Amino acid sequence: MYKRQLQGPARDLFRNSQIATRVNRTACLTNKASKTYERGFWGLSATDNWEGYFAFAPGYENGTVCPPCAAASLMFLPETVLKDLIQWQSQAPSNLWGRYGLADSLNIDTGWINPDAIGISVGPVYLAIANMSRTTAVWNDFMKVSWSKIALARLQSKTTTIAVE
Image (cartoon, rainbow, N blue to C red):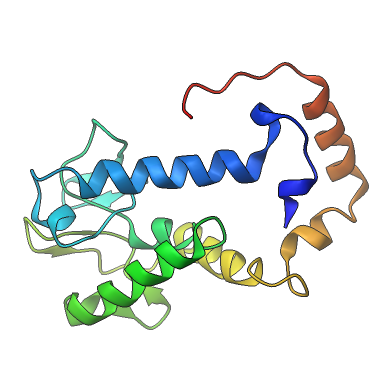
């Protein structure tokens, strides 16, 4: 895992991703304004809904979530995300699970489930699963590329501030 590659609290990409995952999940599961959240679904992100394409975030949502976006956080909070995925499988409508995995988005309040599987949502789920193992971690291959090392070195030389802890 790459959490040991970067130093300092603002440059710890792994820790920042864990924080972002917790914020996203908590924002949904503590929001009682939607049946989607009450049933344990989360994954605020840019995704389709019945009205078109929107970028959802805490404070800017309508009950639509992107389950594959939440699943792509598997490597950051494995126990939590896996527990949620198992719960979703047992209680979700049958059309939430398709040929390529989770439907891209859903909103239980409106009864809408995206009929599309979108690669930009599904692909990161498979990368997250691969990153769960030290032997298959995509990060290992990424770090073999010279420009990856250069980019990370430049990132470490910058002053960065994070607003959430």
